[in-house]
Length: 99
Image 1: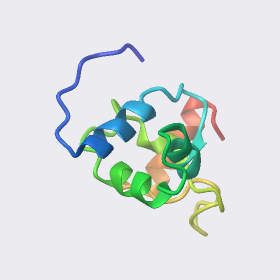
Image 2: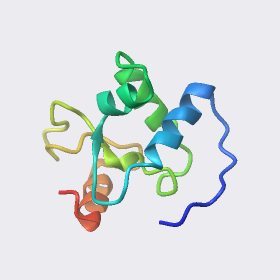
Image 3: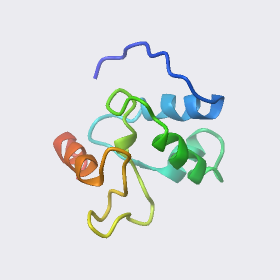
Image 4: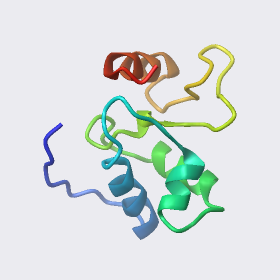
């Protein structure tokens, strides 16, 4: 996906998370803890999850590429939930070749 400038409004931490998410390439996933560690905040996995949930532009900031370490929802194992629906998240990950 081409890089485009975004004027995202959020806390400094949310903006840092959203920038980190834009670095995850299609076809790859990271856990909330991996994103937190990459930001130098290894204990902030839940805060990363909250920042993902607050993401206002789903596909431009690909929060669907972040999955729980423990697997996630029983209905869609391995992907976790998503603000726009777990089934959509799983479909996007499958389309990108991440599943």
